[in-house]
Length: 403
Image (cartoon, rainbow, N blue to C red; front, side):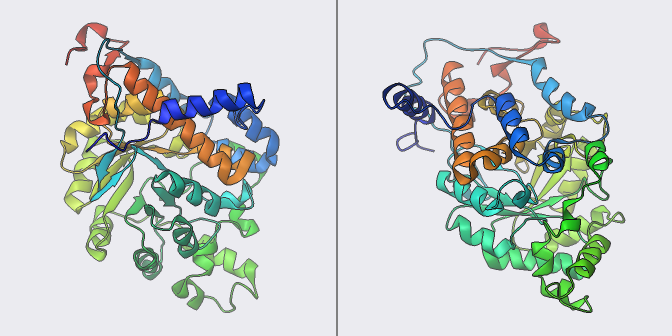
């Protein structure tokens, strides 16, 4: 990897913000603070829509633990190193990405902004970051792929109880130009999400997030009437086929054999499951607990990351999801062995407030923070980042800080 053409995300963003703020009296549209960003999105959203994106399983203890897990680790800055030329790029699945950040699959984005996934995909494409389109997106996967142009896009697969429908989604993704299948395995059934239950709200019943199903030829063949004529019946059919609680590792092996695209399994938090995923033939693993949305009192994703990384031992890339809010969080996850992270709720809040521009601004802020934190810890490439960057606050004497 070369530093020659790598953008200086941190400097460029700071110069832009301070120049516009001081000389043009134009402060940023969005706060760089995640907490302030979330509060602004909450103010802008319908209460049910906010509950859907912000909510988590049960009392929210897993979601809280995801964030608290970052507090265990302390970054150790190193001094007087030449960090004038920095490179955030990473290589995964045969492609070089400009930074170790992808936009996580988040469904039904039309309830946050009228442009939904198309706006998010365009913002990601503008920055060269991978956009993962959800099975339950508001627009058909083909339209989302078109919005990304030549930029990288992945397709997130929710398994269906109809095997032919699952196969159809995978084939459509390949035909549309997606570069990987990200199969979510932590959702054989939906979790108990108290906020959604309290609101009595499921967006699919409003016809949101079903575009891939309504546009699928296999799905349409199962209907007595097309969705355009009887949308309520089509929604009920969607609820019948969404998910499959009978899945086993044999099904994952079937998927890996079914497609030539890289298959990345998302939702792994136990090293034994990582081993089984490798046996099934996956090309990548995402350590994730679905942002705390599936199981309350579950292990924090960051806590699970090192054990999965140790088990995988470099055989496939390990990615991380669940709890990333800032660039410093990205660096911590990389130091614990992740090769890329998935950013979720922050960009959705940016979408809510300012559409495509909001997504872009959130991503640029995270990239700037990562770039500056990389420099301030004395490193010039993300490949340099390892456990020596960190001190374990719970066991500081056992952590090496030399490199």
